[in-house]
Image (cartoon, rainbow, N blue to C red; front, side, top):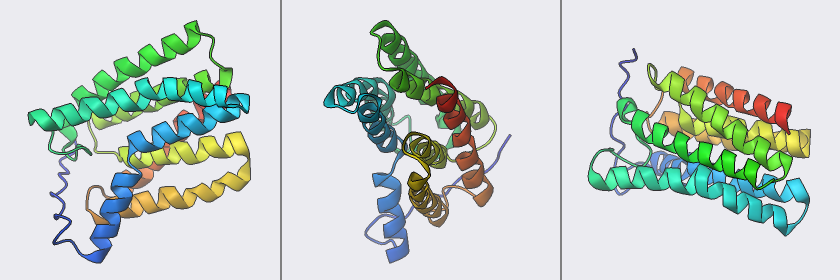
Length: 206
């Protein structure tokens, strides 16, 4: 069982310029934000029309909005330290609740006959959440980079190798997590690699 405990990040007011940049990257490119953006992009790609964006918005409710709401509620009630849940043992319950939300989304997309690429993406997100949760039970893997790594690879699968340039975004996220001492380098690299599991599921099902 991992004993790694990340320190509380410095407040934005007293943080160094490097730490302020890292805080901005961590917040703007947080997992829920990446998930919602990816669903909208792949939603459009699935139909090449605004109808696909509608499917993306529908899926985002279950894969992004509800999970984020669960976390923010936990922070408000004092059960979670912060919206990024830096304490590993606090992650299991919100991840399990998010899992139920994503399963609901997968089921509804299937029943409503969503585009296959859209359904494949949500199943891939479910796979990513399950594998991340399994690792989190004993080790503080980077969820930020797990989502970022999966996002980069899924975009490359959908739009071609040119989108591998988005890997710079995943690298920036990893850098931000290291600067804030939220994770070690192995945790960041393992998280990025774990994102590949979700990408493989997307490739197999799309």
